[in-house]
Length: 405
Image (cartoon, rainbow, N blue to C red; front, top):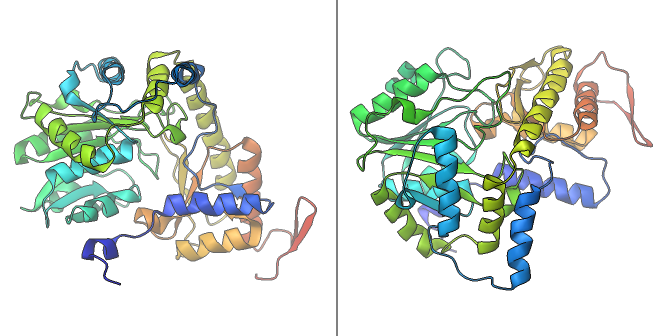
């Protein structure tokens, strides 16, 4: 069988495979604890449900414009004005089948083969593969000081004549790091100076802790006309716990949105009208659910950090936002894929290997679940790895005897 060069270069989405594995084990009745997912457990906002069911009951479920309905665009315009203090026109907006598609069509619109795209590491698992799908070259940048907070010099050291774009995700998946205002300002100015596109993946920007706030890139931009190369991406998935609705959007200059819409029109056409209706309900409805989710996640983070800080040999970094803790487990195994599989096999705790995010020896642990799951999950991991733990462990009625230490 003949497979394209690009097709051969693309790996399976590790996060999606993880969710599939979890579903299979749960269906078999396994006592699984899922500490690897990126999916809040909150219920869909009532305003989203009302909008969705109202249209569903009408029976008028039709095609939508490629770049989103007028009502959807109006909701995004309102959102952008409220959270970015930036007034945009409908021609500056595209609604997509999730933030992932918004980023993908943006990359397809701006990249040529052999172009380079810079993004800080650790990074979301799809960035390298999405860049490669365009025939371009991903350039992950590891902060030279060993932290999760890149500096401008880290970006500049990796800049070449082939660099076309920079992607920033703050708060960051997997680390939860919020990049400083100074850093964002420096990157915005650098991109304007060098004529680079800057894609801001802001899907966690309302899930910040300890009264911290993400930087507003518009605040530092001098070019805000039709020559702007800023692309702001967001979605309803994380902040409204609507992962299954697959609605995201991008805000950019009119010409770029036009090209992105042309590409999307040949990929999927417009996002489903029912999903857009639900997203509109969430964006324009009561917002208390977002704050409730944020507070829950902050508390969950604190519980997980307390447990990990009492775990000899594990070095967690306190996240500023999102719903992940990225912890260094290299004392126990520098191969994070092997370690993650070991924990799943031995104690049925599902974690995400750090290598998928560009940093081996780490595990990404999700705080989306219940306090009970977080506490028991970390206890199981500790029992599996810590030689000072008791030799036996009960999971429900199942007795486990540790014979590998």
